[in-house]
Amino acid sequence: MMIGISEAASEKIVEILSSANARNSFLRIGVEEGGCSGLSYKLIADEQKTEGDILLHKGEFSLLVHTNSIPYIEGLQIDYEERGMIGGFTLNNPNAKASCGCGASFRMENYRGEVKKCE
Image (cartoon, rainbow, N blue to C red; front, side, top):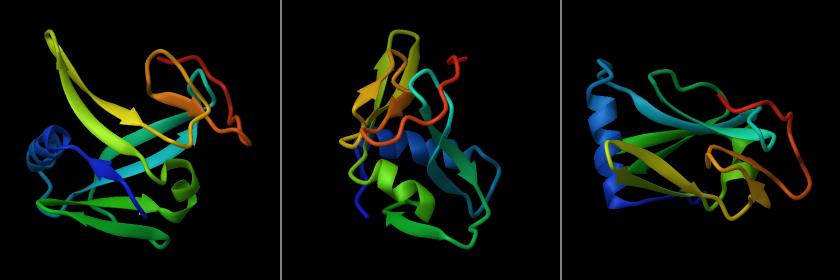
């Protein structure tokens, strides 16, 4: 399983996890139904490793990815960009055939997901 994380994104993830008030927290990366293109990324701090999760060690932190999400995010590249007064993670997914303007929603060539309006 290959997920690339830039140095800027790694620094931000370490910062987020250390402020999450959880001593043994991971960054969970997944995919869920919804978003204006049909599938949405989910990045959250999580302390619970569940059956079906794969643990990926990335230096100062670890990622959790459920096996169900792997076909959607294999090869994902995560970066972090400061833009004016706000910053955000950018996700470059080689599996996405279309994505929306917000960059948080995408669809696959063979699976559209359930389209919902972005919040």
